[in-house]
Image (cartoon, rainbow, N blue to C red; front, side):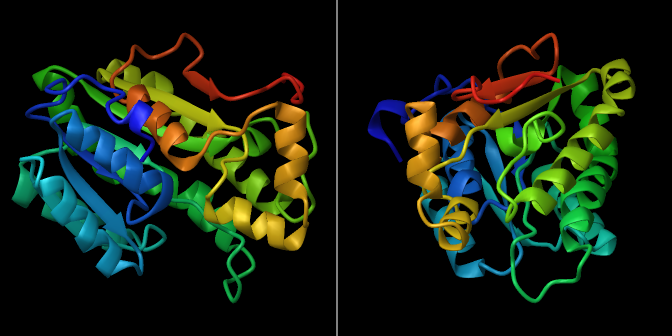
Length: 263
């Protein structure tokens, strides 16, 4: 991680809290886990097929003195998600923070509607499955849900993106819209909800795939934006969203937005 951002949340801020970060065996999810653990949270590391990386991360954060639960779960499989949350309740006693970080859709060999299944249906399904634990946390003093997305998806209705990314962007925006419909009911239960949207993040799998499909894409976007966040820098913003007051519009925009037209 970037040394200058090694502690975006004050140590001890999250002591006694439990945080689940989906898709957290690597990349933004892994660094988000590190930041939350540094702040004192017990963490749940979720992975789909990167068990060794998840276990390595768990060992790293346990050295900080927090508990770490590693759970393999496919978010597109409701039974798998239910099993994961049952393990969270049994092993860690509850859930205070849910970070919906897992996403995809550019992988090869997946079903045609996989992006929509993962980026919309699975996000809503995971939140609904976690609601009993989050409601209990809210009664104890607060609960938070954070949905991670990109400017290319958040602004897709007003600003075109690269053709290679458009299906993913549309599915992620559909997921954001579906989750936003739940904000009033979440607020009634005392559960905060924040969308964290970032520009193209250097070092992520998505950026790498886009660069492969469209050579020069990263350099072009960097030139237009002036700066692109790296994985650790963006993860710090995601972690902060778990503790900072919920913005009035439930949206935390990270990085340059001047190239994107407002809705």
